[in-house]
Image 1 (cartoon, rainbow, N blue to C red):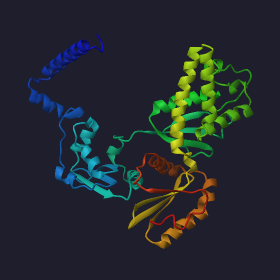
Image 2 (image 1 turned 180 degrees about the vertical axis):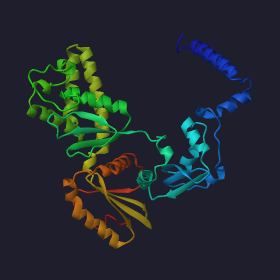
Image 3 (image 1 turned 120 degrees about the horizontal axis):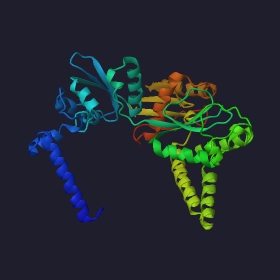
Image 4 (image 1 turned 180 degrees about the horizontal axis):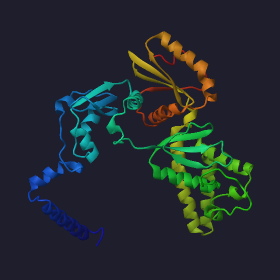
Length: 392
């Protein structure tokens, strides 16, 4: 009787009976007490609130950073928000976790600092957490993790991997950030399988005496470990993978579509279904990669945030936040143009410093998630920035 009207009604009645028995064991026998327990939320207890609702209602409806302090004034937590009032008020809802409820029970004061944009809020939050090290920032991870597709082009036999961290090593290509691990993992596995790229970790020392792993035996990998393919042949497959990730997805998607149709015409339906799944996964990845437009380390742009009377320019060269300058006049705009002209080529040759990785990730994520009104992006195709580009 599943998914039929009577069967579903009986199942719902059985579940209700189980819940009523659970409530009775908890000593809850009246509806008002059941509602009171529900209002305790998933934390299992009522939120101990020491900040008046009026104080939260008075917070600005603007991007910025908020700092939560205890009754002694000690800093407990630092966070960022697109809209401060909405974000802070969410801490006092019934849907908070036990860890968040514990934080809120110790909060007696909330301070805020508004910023020109959510990008500046994210950069300020990261800097303040590094400097002040609030205890609850280590316990609470509110943002969904961002993932980067990585290809180490300095390896003789590169592989396509997924990571939450960017690498400072020279020659590592990063594409992203992506939100949601499962779909991206499926896509890069399909890409590696189609092109025969290895998935094993570590540095290879190819030898004809090596017996390939199960993937090599099944034909999912070209097995460079036992010299079934030479460096040049493998490099060509890597080149096709990089071309796909940079947005030239047509050749590989076309091949997959033809293979799917040929398998279906020959009545090899399981094989056709496998090609169809690979095609769907890579089409999704191609769409997301195209939307991101460029590899992180190839981002060269200027982000202008704020209103006409209070604007700032953030210069991003080779993916790195190279300069932030308050645009308080023509002289400031001239300095920004001069900086771009002097550093555009230098940053292409400059190795990524480990201390730059966090800001690179923040900028890349902001570019992916930004709303149309959160800032103006000026893409750079060379060291020359038009004199009118920074005008309001």
